Length: 370
Image 1 (cartoon, rainbow, N blue to C red):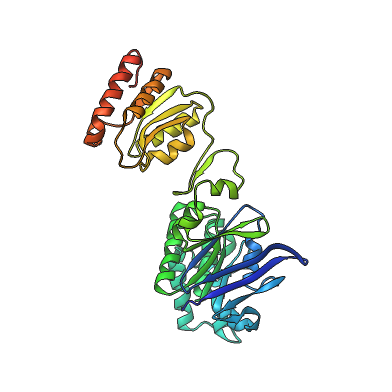
Image 2 (image 1 turned 90 degrees about the vertical axis):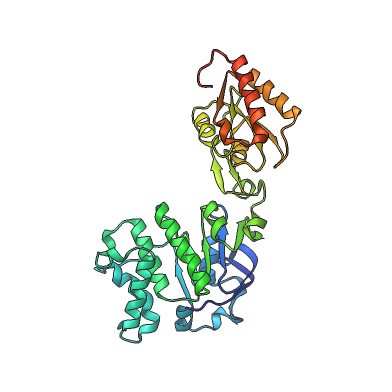
């Protein structure tokens, strides 16, 4: 398996002569992973189908190693590009091994006989995606998640230079999502496999992709590295999010923050406050959080869920202004929850934490759970 470069030049795609996404320009080096993201119906699958020649583009070109896609014979294209799209494969009385083995047909000749090398490629692909134990099972008798993995084995056994995947992690549980994406990453690094796929899981796209392409309206809205694409507020804008929020730096999604003035003050940090924030959100209790540094694990989630966050810049000292605001909020709240132990904080915060805990005890001395 040897990867190759691909360039998408002024590609316009659509159906029945009606453009859906216009003038797409993307260039990928060998071994890069590109992920398409965007709302449902934005045209991601249409772009993928046009790249693999399942749909005829309305304009522009797709070039592999500088050669336009339409110049490839069917056989050459099958040995170069492999795809797993969302449509179901219709099989009759085929085992999972037989389905995976259809990926070798570009190499088998007229009678479709598998050589020892073909069989080895199929077994390796099935092992890679964790379906070896299903080899002799009827393909129609397995779950959707298992079918998805068998189809991925089929695509990988084809030993393509470019792998095109439409929502490949659909139906997969956490274990197999991570195992499959790890395998993709390994193939891109070690074999130079070039991957183009669509994903709904923003956090996974952020972690695996060299480049992200955002489809919005009738255009490619953004293209770049995850760091370039996932800027503050962009995901809400791209997906028209009106309820809840997304923390672009981590891909974390949160449900809407409780409305109203804070009734609880959470003294947290180092990731210890997050479970409390989410419990209060589930119970519909508005809360305030602090005092948090802007590089603290709690801070992004607090910004999405808390009515107010008392915070300071990363590595800065806690000033009197922050202490005063924290005391004001504590006075207004009916309860204070501290998720930190003093021994877990640095010397620079122990004095402030002790002071706020003492102040909380004075204000809420009859409250339990401090």
